[in-house]
Image 1 (cartoon, rainbow, N blue to C red):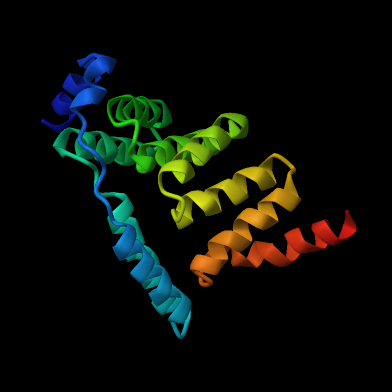
Image 2 (cartoon, one colour):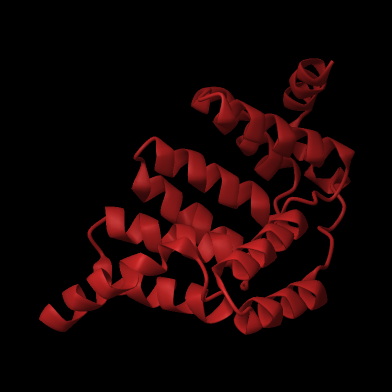
Length: 182
């Protein structure tokens, strides 16, 4: 049944974006979670806050958008990157103001090692949700893959300011050594 909804969603014209409602405004909740992450006494607590952030980002504007997001994530988990990319492209077309569509499409492009295509999607996600810690972390990893380590360090620092418990924090000393060498 879910795959039928996916097929129907893809069959709808791209002009349907006018039908997508505005994404939920979680800015206050996200600000509170960032404060909670910053005050967390340890990694386990900080990572638990990250899970709460993900719950906010993964709340799509409506049922159709949620189905596309869920379908894309399921396909990604089963390594069907083509199917996932198709779902996320449909999501971005349908809900161009929803940051997570861009973030997830960037992640698929990153996994496919198409870093040049991932970067604009991450920027689009961050334009829509500037405090999207995961998109900022993804941008740092993408910049590392592109050999732009100084920029990666800046992006990673910005993400770590919001949540100092991210597992990617282990990369920062390596990136800083590269910065110092420049």
